[in-house]
Image (cartoon, rainbow, N blue to C red; front, side, top):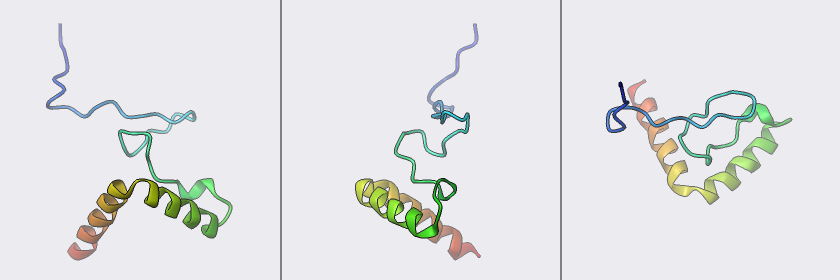
Length: 71
């Protein structure tokens, strides 16, 4: 019987009700801009999320900075 070694594989991803896989493996994924009617609404909700999950926000900002440095 074949079993997946959890040390060498990705954990199962969370799935939204519409079937879309979440980027993160936790429910604390940042808001999706497509879910809002305006950029202002999205930015407000993103700020709330960033304040609620500062460690995840810091990880995202760090990764964006790394990508920009490579350009």
